[in-house]
Structure formats: structure tokens, C-alpha cells
Image (cartoon, rainbow, N blue to C red; front, side, top):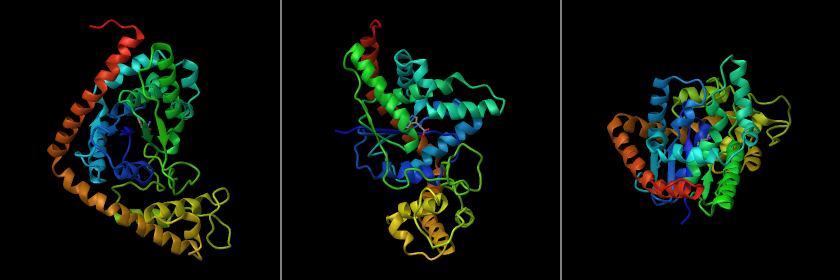
Length: 332
Ligand code: TRP
């Protein structure tokens, strides 16, 4: 059995990047419920300035969107992180395993801390310890594989280091997980700033396509994507033409083609953008439709989440209890 675990953070509306880079591969994994765990990691949304009502709304929406994308409760465990205490229980033990230095080195921490300071906000301590909680999310389930976007690679590396260190010091307790990334569109970039990730948390700029955007909005955003000056037709050149490369990657991810080969089919950027817009609209259409149905019955989604939390608790509890004993805490 290979157990997979992944999480999505309810800090903003889910984007096309979340869908192509993560959610879609989760759906494709052919799994049993105790092999595939997908989590709305709401505790992680509290590491930066937040509005309680918004976090609540986005958590529900993220769960609904995951179901709408095709995650089936019969074939995976879908739940909300804060419903399962084992995550925070284990996070503390891992804080006693990690060092201050290794957390301060995390690229995402440094970027976000700088942003918070620039905005005149305090940097929450939980922003620093965030990767430890993420490690707890993963290790609590004896996870083998963590399907995530490339930007999470460093966090999964840290998780591995912590698992190995804990096992060496206190005896074998955790499986050592591995990150896996999708081949194309692991990182969908912002349509306006193709050198930065299409992020849900930043300003909801015109370069970000949300999963629930209306088709007309998707089309407008894609048609206005920055390309690059330079003639010679459409070529795949990630260094010199990141905007065009991003469009080709998105098209490839939506249509199943190959970015370089797709480039050959176009003379100009206009036609490429029209095809990208159409491909994205068609890719998202069934998800939007299903989301509307599911959102009309919030009780149904809650029921799925409650059952998911119960199943998740049953899986995590013995692992975390074992870690408590191993590290030197008395049995209650
Ligand atoms: N840090 C991840 C992100 O920002 C979200 C996350 C939290 C996660 N815990 C996780 C992803 C565990 C995979 C496994 O996207």
C-alpha cells in the first residue's frame, strides 16, 4: 500500500494553478480511502493576517471544490485539519526535533516574513513553525507520497529530515515520505508576471485565473496575458519567453499535448491565446457546474468532512501515540 497525503490552504480562492498543479493529480490517483488523504489545512491559514469569516468561507469552498473536481469520498479521505487534533499534538514533538536555524532558512518563510514586515504587520511565530505543522500533517499518517507543487519541495525535504532524525534518536516511528510533482504545469505562472507563481494569496491580480471564474472572465484574463516581444513565431523558450512558455504549459496541461510540439502549431500569439482560453474554460467547466450543485447542499459537504475527520483520526492516533511514547512521555 502506498499512502498519499496532500493539503490545500484556504487563504484564497483556488486557482487554475492549484487545479493543474495539484488537485487534478489527486483526482487521478486510483486509491482506497485509507490510502489517499486530502486535507483542507485551515490551521495554516492562520499564519498570516486573516479574517475569521473569510477563512471559514474559504475552507468550506475549498472542500466543496475538491469534491467538485472529482475526489470521491468512497475512494479517499477528505477532511479539515483542525478537526483532527493529532496534527497539533505531533507538531509539538516535531518542534522539539527541528532547529531554529533550519526553519529560518525556509525560502517561503523568508519571502512571507519580508512581505509581512513591509506591510507593517508583525510576523506571526506560526509562520516560522508552519513547515513543522506541515511535517506533522504528513508524518501523522505514515505517508509515503506527497503530491504537491514544486514550491513545496523544500518543505517536504524538511519533513524527510525530521522523520529520519526522529527515527534515529527515538527508534523507528515514521515513514519517510517523498514529494511527487506533475510533469507539466507543476508551476502555473501568473499571466501578468510569468516569473512568479499563480498564487491564490497575493493580490487577486488580473494574472490569476480562479477555478470558479466565469468563462468570460477566464477568456479576458488569458487574452490579456503578457507575452514577450520578439518575433519568429511561437517558440518554447522558458528563459527568454516565460509568458509564452507559461501559456504553452497551460495548454499542454489542459489538452494533454506537449508544450514544444504545441508551439509548432502557431504562427502568432493571438491564436495561441484563443486556444488557451478555450482549453481552460472547457477544463474548468465541469468543475464549476458540479461546484454549484454541491454548494446548494452544504449539509452534504459537512457530512463528508465529518466522516473524513473520523477516519483520519483513526489513522493518525496510533502513529502519534507511538511518537509520544518514543520521545519519552509517560503513557496516560
Ligand atoms: N504548505 C502547503 C501549501 O502552501 C499546504 C500544506 C500544508 C500541505 N500541509 C500539507 C501540502 C501537507 C501537502 C502536505 O500549499
